[in-house]
Image 1 (cartoon, rainbow, N blue to C red):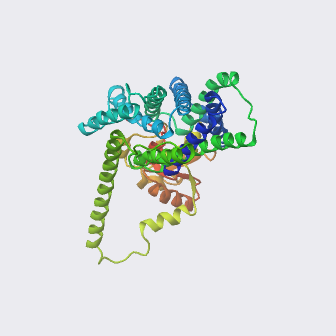
Image 2 (image 1 turned 120 degrees about the vertical axis):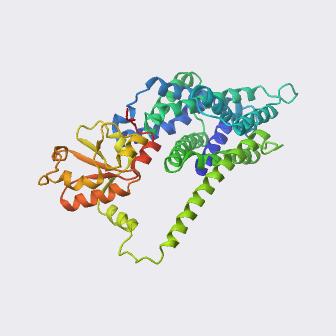
Image 3 (image 1 turned 135 degrees about the vertical axis):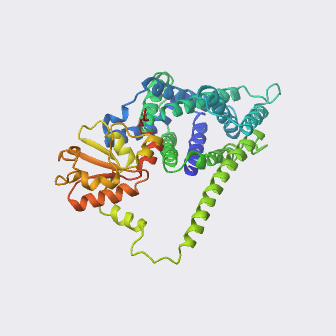
Length: 421
């Protein structure tokens, strides 16, 4: 996430530099090419399955909002200091919080409402309406932040049904298609090698930054990496001072400081809770330290199993959901399925019976496991139980794969889920 924020700041700085010679429509269109290039790579890997969505209108709407917010922001930074513009965009989390409470029904505590009020006050301080040094372009940044907030709300609505690659693909194509017409009418062919280098660098860095942020959200909870997003203000300020001689009057407004402390406090509480959990586990471990040492620990068994079985990534399995030869087998406890839901179409097989269910000579054999042409993928919650089960089945001569990071990662990456009635 930190690398992604650094790269996005670099993209903004390059865009501001290019506004001296190119129109914002053209700059934003080329900026989106980095994301389009990434989509083409995904298309080559996963095929047209990345365009399968249950909410095409929302996906297209998100792409339109992405194009609009980027255009407004780049138009604004051609007129105002980069640090000022980035500071005003931090009103987006405030709008997201308000819309989440109104549209999504999410609960917002008193401390978050306090942060919203402080955040709005801080944004007003930056915009400085009614004063001599107020610049109207800051209102464009404000509108860009509102559109960005709308984009985030749509992302939350889509998270339960569409995977992240689908959202990236629709955002890239919808935004670039929307900007193609206005970019054509204001197009200026780059005249120097420097312009061409800056444009190519901006597009590639934008695509790489998007990938970094998505990857960060795949491997860690949003609440853990959220505070790192605020480092973009630091990088934006540094770029502004070094490249554009912006005068730094302040580093963080009261809004950003309030939000920063709020999010960091929440992350600290989460970290403390995890630390307390680990300490409790260590205390329990000390109580059994005198027990006879095992020849092999459970963790070692999982490592050995994974070294010799076929593992499949979550995104790859999501892309194969429509494959008629695919059979997903859920070996979790029935209570886990009832509590957290399950992958649509998955077959439930309790881990304690799986060896008997796949054996044709067993009286408990299940015919679902008797089709040689099928591709069986087993999963549990985090990938440990399924790794051990698939290793055992492999020893029996039964071909199967397992979902490497389990159902928890499936949920994190936005894979479809069904809830028991």
